[in-house]
Length: 255
Length: 360
Image (cartoon, rainbow over all chains, first blue to last red):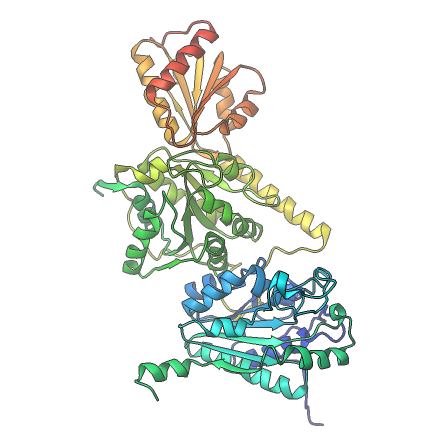
């Protein structure tokens, strides 16, 4: 019989703790497959965040750090700068990366640190129980904005991929989604591209993955996928926002 | 090796290199900025890494990352910056990783001032950050001793896989003194690094982590850290006795540069035939309680002098257990008690102690 699907060596066989319908597991799987396919498992150090994926160090089948809230890019900087031959990645949610860790992510990207960030944006704080995130959509309800996000009071959701793309330092910045099989295929390709650039020592690489949180959105997984497409995707458009080649073209005199 | 005249901050930077540390992450802050300035120039010369972080919070997490991949790493800062590094230090201590931090203390609290002070003694020795953990704290009283203790700092950090903090007041950082360096040990490999994240080729994967959701496991981890510090306390206490051979009524205590000023005060009174004993901890943590108590038991009264409002005083009181009266004299804000000030305080203490024994 032909084997058509199996465990990836990039992940451990431990059962994840994620809620039913959550796409963290899918995103873990994509990262794990990429690590395996590029033959990087034995040279990879991952950095887990604080948030729903705080236990990611139990799932990725490689050496792992657990960082403090928002500081994964600083930890990754220390690791990668001291051992440049390692493949280093951070796996962070929107509370971790876009709120408490905004300084660390912006400066790591601006220094052109040669590691990869997987940024899971589900527009809410998951682990702490559904509070407002910097990426929570206007009028979206959360436990700390029960009447919906009031942009007059707390501003608009932060588009991190666009923000990082505005930096002059060369980088690979992409936004993908995990809500349909088609989009996950594209998402995995972007993640693979990011790790490939890192393998080549090219630049900082950042992949934002739109994700659902049925538990804290108060929707079924199917309704959540629809909500992501209708509410999040128009505001957080998918695509590659920045490539290192764009800059190499410039230094070559334009192409 | 011949002596060179060097500013304290630069000498501390050079001492780290001589200790084999070629990785530095930090952030500028007065009065320690000459350390990162010096190392930004010097580390590339020895094939090392200098990186200016975006903040002290980031710097402390960068050294967490560096220590976690098994390299010798240093950061330096000054008081307000060390407060921001507290987060990283708690994680590094929790994960039992070696690193060295230098705090060139300035006057506080808050933004305070940029002049020398010793107001971070309690922060370093008692309450650096959240959770039960212990730093090893070294307190040099000269530029030469700062250099010597930098080597000790890395050795202890690696021996016990624990962060070590060297506390010097702004004077140590800013003044120039003749100093002799040990032989270069650049490239000296770190000891066993069976904890380090270096890629799992040919071995089980490793995790550097301080999250223990199981209460019993976390309790066990705390017990382990406690046992480690008990071992450190048993093995690593360092102190100096000065002018304690002859009998004395008044014992003088202080740490760091203040202790050095106190030594001169002791010499002044000795010139008048008055004997004063001096005790100086070199390890502010583990604090040498018993060696101090031995001197307290020979004295009628103790005077503790610090450049703060009474911090090491608590350790002196703890050692004395109420057996003798303890006077305190302290100045903060960047005011440095002079030799004359200390002599005056000693005369008052002697009077209260009811005369004095002669040193002769």
